[in-house]
Length: 464
Image 1 (tube, rainbow, N blue to C red):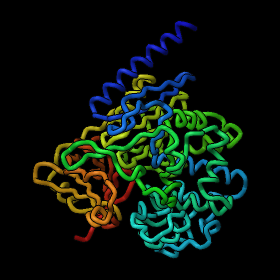
Image 2: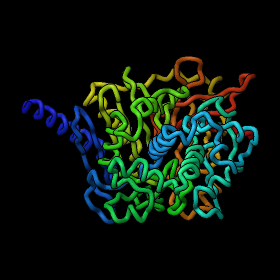
Image 3: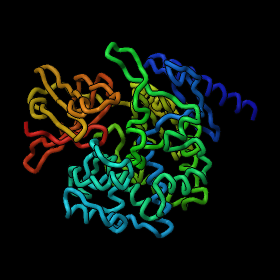
Image 4: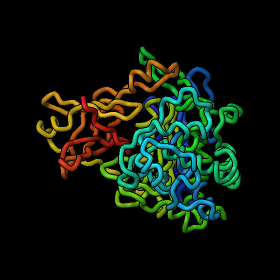
């Protein structure tokens, strides 16, 4: 027994060395990493909460976890399903009767399940909500401006707006605000005392400041603290939660368990099952309910990430091994740091090695076929070829950047990409801030390239 504990401690110490090396390598000011393995929780903390006002990071430091919030929203909705108050296959309009969308026929057909599985056909999100009062109801009232990228149920395309709409279902069914309902149904019963929505609740706890690069390349504090402006509750269901490594591991333990009396085990474990496949995506090979499904070295894992304003979060579980890893970091370099930490954790604790596929040699004809501009409402994506290599660049739309007085993440400079073996429509980025990201090109019935998927989102090809 004592020898076992010593071996576990040695393994945790060795992993702490790995995390420290990765943090230095990526220049992350502060990070908190949590591991659940063999029934034990352990934490590795690095650096400071803020470069300007440094305090040591620990497992109780609050970070915005952004899109990991979707796992909480899905869980709360499933509690309502078990209580007989919501049906997954019911149309959303049963619970949000005043819903108006850009396509009336689609609005009548979208189901609750479509929202939770990202198959509603809704574009990513509304980025210009000028004049709205910050409430979830006001956000949903503007969804008639959001384009459709596909017919409901036709395919998966990651949608923040879809989850925000799911949050409105929670409000209407419970008669509470979304935040009150999730707190009462999920956070409080599980004792997640440091998992909060409001900035007022964050500021009375130790919290990490995000960092972005200034014009001279130096790291500076990011504003606003969340990716979405404080007070805009409309994005809380899809990305508004702030939490700690300690609470996120407790959340993982709940999802690895039998439901703790909040959900039947079959319902809880059913969230891991595939609702729709994903193609050519770094995020995984399918959506569950609130979770991405991802194979790692032949083992099924589930997880979710979150990207904020100079802050990044990851939470991944291997249910068959009762294993979980979470990692939170407070700079733009946090994305690559977190990806490296997750990979290192699976290898170090479970012996699982994640291997990237090898792109095929450059093909000029294929490169020219896909070159062009693609877009969602917030970003432009430019794919170009110079006759020797294919590159991908991402920019926040200039009009949005000019209209905002908040710090925004930098545009992503052209980075090399390559096609993957197979039918020729899957690709992988091989350098830059998104190195390792995978996606695929969408074609119409005539075989013309009409869109490209990146990060689970469909970017439509522009006419220009």
